[in-house]
Amino acid sequence: MLNDLIKGAKKYATTNPAAKKAGIPEGMYLQCPKCKKSIYKVDLKAQLGVCPHCSYYYPLSPRARIFAIVDKGSFNELDKEMMSVNPLDFPDYEKKLVNYIDKTDQKEAVITGTALIDGQETVIGVMDSRFMMGSMGSVVGEKLTRAIEYATSKKLPVIIFTASGGARMQEGIFSLMQMAKTSAALARHDENGLLYISVLTDPTTGGVTASFAMLGDIILAEPGALIGFAGPRVIEQTIKQKLPEGFQRAEFLLDHGMIDAIVKRPDMRETLACLLKLHQKEGK
Image (cartoon, rainbow, N blue to C red; front, side, top):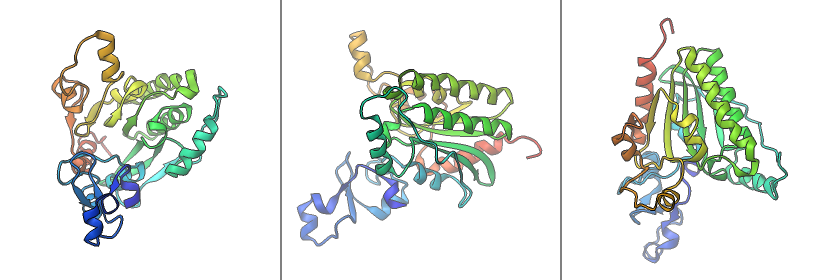
């Protein structure tokens, strides 16, 4: 599970000569990419991938996030074997898919399933930024839509953790169609009076932001998460103006009424459990 917890971390013992001289075993410590301080791996795991020195948020793999949120042994995955094809014969797309499958040990950029959170049944979807930057292709959209439709049929709430660069360009219009499909599924879920909680993590951008990410009845975000449609550089080049400091970060969006709350990672399970309990249907 520790290997799944973080990505992109530098091994302190291999990058710091003093650590080598002190006899620190390779891989025992990591170097924070933000504050550059060393972090004991065990401490990082206990902090759910949050740097104890500067509170930098390491990306979490979907399974590590699920493990941290749901009741032990309660997660049942849906549509596990669903995989992308190459509908537009985009050059080298199949090769890229195989590489990412090998790299992440995941078939696609989202995991969906049912689970219990403090004993309360819910449908959960978690996007994987390691898999083609969490881009939304036809399989990502289909898996999320099926999960939402399952929740509607079983009268269950939905929680989706987003982490994406947007629509997947290798699938063209098939990717863009997923924006409407997921949104329509959520509309039917809403018509049945059911709860949808969207949790925005770093980054949540492009077509994902423009569809299901911002449709939550309650929208939460992790601290410092980048949230927006176009990137800051694109916007500045378009409007020929300097953007405000912190633009498109979770704190900026909270100040401007775009999200409901910022929740620290160690508090996420308790917060979700409380929200589910508050919105629990009678007789459940």
